Length: 298
Image 1 (cartoon, rainbow, N blue to C red):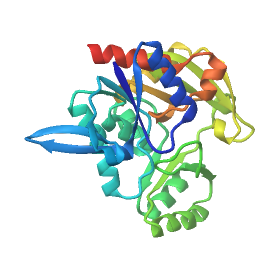
Image 2 (tube, rainbow, N blue to C red):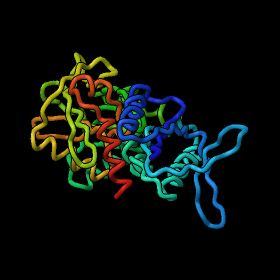
Image 3 (cartoon, helix red, strand yellow):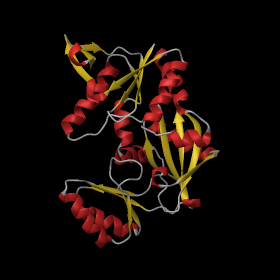
């Protein structure tokens, strides 16, 4: 069996190698599929994905299953549309893709993810998103302390804290002038000064880490230190419920504990697991590949 690894031109090197190794351990062959090399054909009413092989032409993509790592950077709507339907063409032709493209899009979008989680009864921070700077102004005024984030970004980049609505108004006006939406959350006072990342694969928690730094940000990329933890029953249940609500085969669910209980901060369908693997001694790639092989054979 050939198992695809769908990625952009900037792969997560360590995770890619882990997946390759896990695929071979199952007696299967890994196949790297660059998003830019996928073409979609509709011939005689049948949707078929192809892979461009340079001047040699194209070959059909015929896989039982594949792992979607990342669709790459998106510059405009048309490019985004092409990427989405390229992966969808694989799903339509019978390939089991984890995570499926629609779930991936929703879960990697902070607003879409929180809307889905909230509608499924999962606690999320009070949030405001808009293209109107006044909406952000009123949100910061209501929240007191607020966190401003990009809708689609990782590693804590572009995330900052603000507690003055008038100062925030200047920032939000710049966002609007750049045709960027604003995304504001109520700042949460985290217990123990950090948060949890719980990795779920196939509806089961395979491990968890607690991340803490000297600042309020808990991203390892921002200097936080991670340690393995044993999640309690409630934390485990929230992570599993979150992955299910977002229809994810695998995910890293970021959860903060406050005096009022647990809150899900974000979902990560393209979870980076190098630090997690180091501190927990658990290799997510093995679990992911076993899961998708099982689903492809079901």
